Image (cartoon, rainbow, N blue to C red; front, side, top):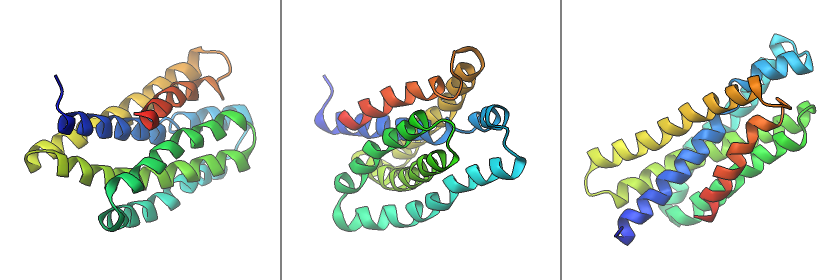
Length: 178
């Protein structure tokens, strides 16, 4: 039987995994967007930048805000917003404005969740070394599996601008519900 404390860190780690998936699923999609939407190299770089700009303030403010107001009230809304960012990519696959808003929201969610949830896992782990391994494993799994799944689906599934995002919608909603 899983104790409440261990169950909590598992749920938080799954949330980190889900947000990590959503953060990096977009990387292989840049090639798909360039091909399908006939984008210039500058437009592709801009789509990447749109993610990075809100990521930085999210990283800088997420931890201190969660120190002050608590981990749960800060982490949970951004875990729930992560699949919403992906939903925007699904709903506006040919609109650069919609893609940009989705990417910006994903960047903000990533920054806030990565810092705050890592601190939360640390609080729930019996020692610092274990908390680092737990957080690193959750994020690395999301960072690795998200782009691999998106690339495979973009290559071989129908509708390469939409289908690659569907796994994150499921995983992200599950994480938000958990």
